Amino acid sequence: MNGEKSSSVFGKERWLILLLFGTIGQIAWSVENMFFNLFAYEIFPDLDTVTLMVQLSGVVATVATLVAGTLADKLGNRRAFISWGYLIWGITVALFGCLSPELTEAVFGVGGDKAITLTLAFVVIGDCVMTLFGSTANDAAFNAWVTDNTTHENRGTVEGVLSILPLIALLIVAGGFGILKDILGGFRNLFLLLGAVISLVGVYGIFKVRDSESLQRSGSFRDILYGFRPSVIKNNAPFYVTLIIVLIYGIACQIFMPYLIIFMTTYLGFEVLEYSLVFGIAILGGAAVNLYLTRLSDKMDKTRLLYFASAILAVGLLMMYFFSMLENKIAILILFGIGGFVMICGYIFVNALCGSTVRDNTPTEAVGKLQGVRMVFSVLIPMLVGPAIGNLINASRGILLPNPGADAMTTEYIPAPEIFLAGAVATLLIFAVIPLLSRLSARKSDG
Image (tube, rainbow, N blue to C red; front, side):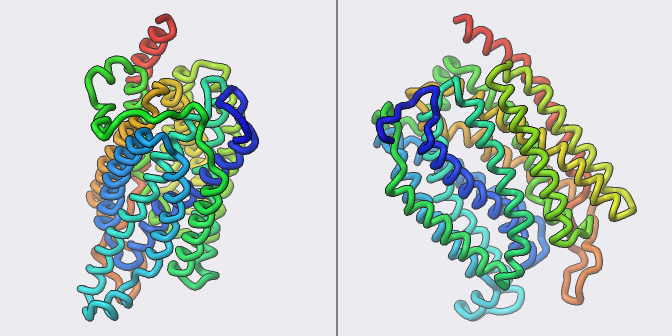
């Protein structure tokens, strides 16, 4: 990058690449996490399908990152995986928008329930295909590129910006995409447009992304399991203990996050503009507060700050739980929004602290090889366990779809407010792990 080397200075070109690829990548993930779920739910109101789709996506994401991260290390190349990965990722998103029961009926000659069932199967498969390329490009290559090009002195600041990008994406997707879908005439055109944008970013990357000059070829395919070797775990204990915190945080968030928009539109009865307003205020406020909070992480003990950040997240979820059961809709809009703001502040802050701590404790000679291990803790297990807990809660409450249409299956249940309570309880488990991380970090510093 014009001779710019990895240092405490994160140059303008790197910032542009980080913001462009980071933002578009997070928008794509937000669409998958929220609108792909809503897309499937509108084909047939079945939370079991949504849960299965989230779980399989987590498995594919982890396997893809393990293989692609190892291969990127072996080839000493991140840029090709980032650029071509984004290009193909966009194509898969665009094709996803073409799925519908009508198309299934026309192509396969089946109708009714069979067409719906087959379409849902294609939706789940399509989500997995999109995740394959998305995780290769973003989770494996882009995340390793960020680690390659940052140092201990600037990772807190860089991670703070990265942790805000998912919230900016959530604001754009949760609010703007709902309105944009109506303007464009449905999901098909929405996904076609998004896919084109992702692919264009990939084309830009082919010409502009450059690898760190310090990046060298290393390892082999045997290193796919490198991060699970007992010796590696022993020698990098702070890295793995931080991942345990990431695991708990991920499970807590996945208990409620896949069902959040469905909850707001069904249980709370919010219209697009109403939940857009709630999301907008909460996310913009949370992002502004965390720009200040994440700067503190470069000056203070990140491990101790995790107590504060986790408490904020838990309090916000408790507020969302209690306020969602109010009777007055205006009161719910205001107070649920305040709870959402508090939750978002904790959500971003915990994510930023964990992300920068993971990067601080990642050995420089094994950055790519350990991206898959990170995915096991941050994606695979949380996306298998969290949605299962959330859906178990939803099923046990059995709250029926309110005011169903003439053709709706009235026996199908909707998300319940207890998913926020469970998320808060799970978040508080982080407190049990922080003392161990503090001891190990202190021992590493002394050593």
